[in-house]
Image 1 (spheres, helix red, strand yellow):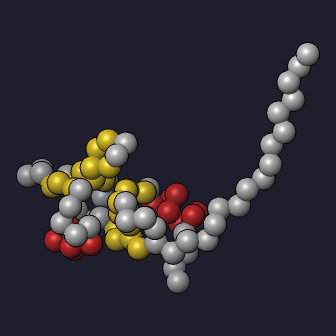
Image 2 (tube, helix red, strand yellow):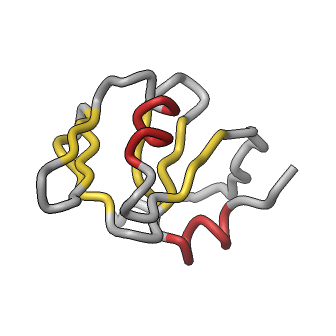
Image 3 (cartoon, one colour):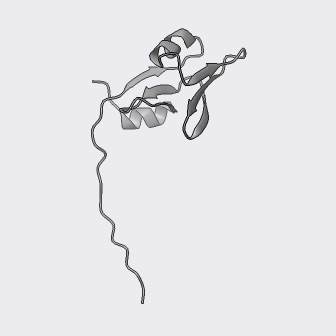
Length: 87
């Protein structure tokens, strides 16, 4: 007998987030935004965000997002622009 899987459609709940764009030179702004935690900056200008899923390298132009439960993570600009709009 074949099992039939029924799927349902879901809509993402609207949520307001805070974000800052990493431009490679705004480390103080990013670190203040992140309350001076969960990130590191190396001598080569790289920014790394430390998350529960591991370390994430932030590329120049990426958005650093503060999620609705206080977590921080990077997001590529094209995905950010498809997902969020300014309020």
